[in-house]
Length: 244
Image (cartoon, rainbow, N blue to C red):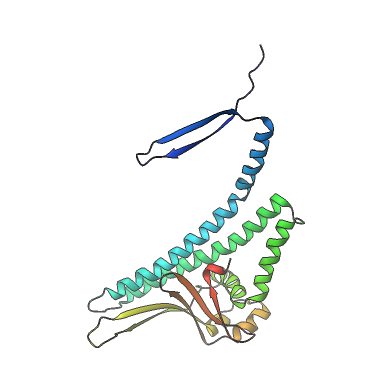
């Protein structure tokens, strides 16, 4: 008795609001050549999926950092009368530290996972891997903010918190208006340099050229920005969204 050949057909489904779905299957049977081509196309998606997952983790940690700043400022603006207690300040410090730590760690992991996955799929000498590795190295060489945030992750893991303290500021537009608060995380230059951490020699020189205090600010609830000075001249904004 001869075995029946597997029959493969293409189809699709459409999800419906009630949780069910409409399913449609084409009558034409897919031949072996078509199935081979499909598997090659789909295989790329699954091979690159770990990179997408790693980047998605970075994006979620970034969103959590923004949310932490936004929620803390909302609480301050909702206080009547304004009372920044020690417990509120400490809880906020811990929350922001956690979010910054998660973000720095996940960006470093994204870089490592992407390099490893491209090396695994295409090989170290491949054009795909070389383009990625070249772009990563160019960013590292061209941007102090990139180099600093990359090494700040190691500092955070092996030495201390990723920033020195939080700064709360509030202003009134008029004498009778409610306080409008802003919050930023401060990185004290000398605190980093005198902590005992073994900064790379060239990076340490660049850090020494920074202002006494650098700020991590969230801008309009949409972006976190590290405000640093480009050692070659001018100012540089190290966007957390861009460090990967």
